Amino acid sequence: MADREYTGQAIGIFELDGLLACYVALDAAAKAANITVQGVERNRLKSGACVKIRGGVADVRAALDAALAAAEGLGKVTASTVIPAPAEGTERTIAMTIGK
Image (cartoon, rainbow, N blue to C red; front, side, top):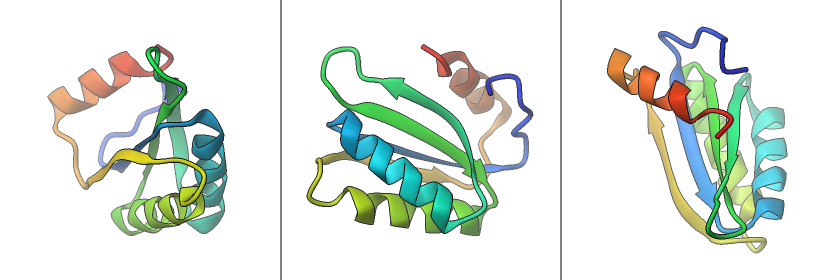
């Protein structure tokens, strides 16, 4: 997935404190909107993970909303955000973290 071109696509990022909650949230996100999963990185210090999803701004926002609603009660949301149009340098940095 890391070699796919995401230029011009929004990115949604959410981090939860438990891996189970992340997978439930990810499933809900994928079913809610037309998005692609760019990556899932396990938190090396705890049991959580950070999920990156890509697509159009409206799809990413809808998917992120669905993901966070699905995770409610399963885990704590550590952080979440949508970047509508990541800068080139941001894209390079994001790509470096995929699969780590």
